[in-house]
Image 1 (cartoon, helix red, strand yellow):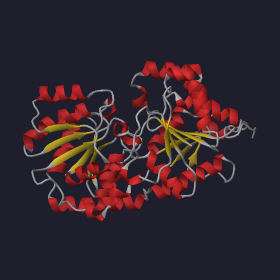
Image 2 (tube, rainbow, N blue to C red):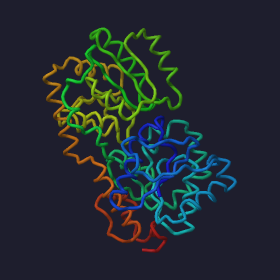
Image 3 (cartoon, one colour):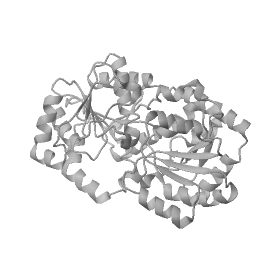
Length: 403
């Protein structure tokens, strides 16, 4: 049973990961079901229509529901047949409830923090997170059998933040719609000029203010270039970014809110390159989608993609300051079309070499589940901190047995 806050268009990377994993697990003959803690009746991504078992949690999933026990009672009924619980995200009310249910029923609990435990992410609303941790989350994590990381970078963050828990590294897949061979090549780019695309949540951790300041230089050296910032306003910070755009006098920067999966692909096809200037990323799905389509990327060194695209010749890795970003963007916009074609091919080959399919992600996740259930040996992609590995005697976090 998978538990998630939302999979609507405004949920960012959650929509492009969790439903696809659940559907792929179904293809592996694992009876996976998705419980969504949102009052809105959100349809699944179009690619998954008819393939996804999902239901919405009744109202009462907020803090009041947690404190009164209503959330836990309703959730226990919904997961009564589950052999394992998989929670996606931190700082939510359903994790403590799921933890108590898992402990009471003695079933495994796995948590995918979705980048929420990264040091940069912890600095956002720190007092709220510390309070919630002290009141609810610290105890909830004691029932967790394993954490899931989507990249080596996130693995390092999790082992540092939670040294008493093992971490499984299982990368996300890339949707088949982003692998259409017709998407390759640069012919689909906008005929109105060169376009740099940002695709993702509008939040401080995405470093979009620095991107706007970098674009001041780009408008001077490449007056035909356009920057499109596309994604849901999470915090909100869109108004602040629009105000900064006006203060900087930027003429070729546009904002667009949520788009469908088909519109995402269309925008990536039109782009000269995708930019991901984040201060922290656990995976960076938009970069994976761009590379799969055959678009070079400009990514910050704080993303898991920086060294990969550098080595593959599929983009440009850069720092996070406005001057760093401006230099990388200028290089991207000055690259000749035939070179962009070669980089696009390298981008597709990179994704292929990494094996980023949902079939593989589901197979490894299924292996992780079987280990937690005691049916298989520990998979090779499960890691422990030095302190945990060296402990001579401890309690088995999967079942409560002494080792």
